[in-house]
Length: 426
Image (cartoon, rainbow, N blue to C red; front, side, top):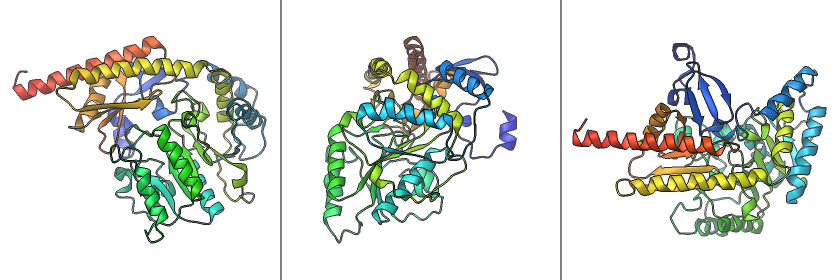
């Protein structure tokens, strides 16, 4: 690991949590240079919904490259882009009665968020955007302004103007936080300008797996319509089937004005996509560009992913089935230690979190102990107090169970060590 310590920037993060050199991967497993195998409950922070080195994707990419297919095309028309758009329309948009235009942005999630914010302000002629407590939307300047996590905002010295934060669903317990939001909108002297847009995640990934209810999302949509505010759903981490449905908002029956997609939409390759209602397409040609907005390899990977996993409900049903396995096992762990620790379980689909409310450090310790047991699992939340579970959607039941066994073994060992330190019984 010395080469990374000597030459790579101190900004490196996950390498510190998982200190080994990974060399190969397949499905829901990673293998390091020493031949040690790890079950992956991280999935590239939600980028690898279809698993590592998915055979359908790899075969399609190899064939495309062997035929000298276009790799870099800016926003020129290419066969790969045409086939992706056709497939996305036929398998994703039309079956859900969604009428969106597509804009390809730079390849990161932050790029597509920046595009959405810029377009919303352009269309509405207003500068303010409302975001929510504990939300995460990226680390470039505009995206960071609507990101609530203080760890990322604290020393960035950016202008935090043009963004207002409101409490997310559940922030004040059972009290309806949209009543609070409405009060600011109703009062012309509240100091909060009517926003161009509201941006949110239906499940806050980095924020701690905070889950918005169906009723709250529906009420938020109604509030936006009442005040002529655009509704932007950031589905970068919890879209692409993570909740069982392709879009995380489908269960609520809402129809956002814009949707940001990245991570798994590229089939594991860099790609970001903004969906927006046709009447919002008020760009002038070339008004918003990016050198790598035409990643044709990602178009190929995404097309084959959609064809193999979204022709029917098989993947969705599999996610719901595996959610039950994951949730049931985590509930048993909570019950096992509820007398000693205050633990809360929450999530939807294959995005779950275990929050340790009385000691934030426990989550990080569980991640470390899990790594020793051969499981990759990360933390999230405003104090990294939540153990976060994002296994690949295609994980098989045996590997899922194996990973959960490793998790429980790690937790048991950690709590046993903690008890031994308290009692002096080593």
